[in-house]
Image (cartoon, rainbow, N blue to C red; front, side):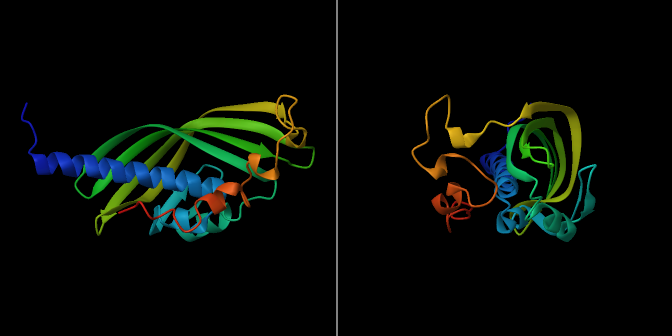
Amino acid sequence: MEMPDDAAAWRFSHDRQQISDCLARLARGEDRRDAALISASFWPDATTDYGIFAGDFAAYLAWVVPGSDAIAVTQHILGQSHVVLEGDSARVETQVSAYHRIDAGEGARDVWLGGRYLDEMERRADEWRIIRRIMVYDWFRDDGPAVDWSQGLMGMAFSGPDFTGRAQGDVSETFFAGRDRDNEE
């Protein structure tokens, strides 16, 4: 087996890291309903198909931001990614578990889903973004009525309002204000 030269090995590692950063940026953007982070993860001519929604990037962005008022909190937890690099293109399968707090009018419920993102990605001007995403669902679990965070955690009151996450107005917005893209270069 031939060992790659240093430049090729660096390029391979750099590309994989940029792809990983893009996927993490997108998950954070979806959880915070942050249009700038999401837009920095997809090419403007991208398409998506989530099974329950399919469309071009503009339609997807309008669907996910600001999101449904019925979904107060989401948390997308990314697992391993299988990456196949093909020059300026890549095919990436990423495991995902996603928590959603949903209130469809009968009180908040905690639900989980698990699946895989199948992403076609392109490198343009040395930047990797998604050009096509398909969501494959592997499992779903309804944990029932959501915990009432106003009561604190395990019988202990929170010392302030910033300890419970929410899709919009979360303390992480000020924590990262103006800094989300600082480490992209």
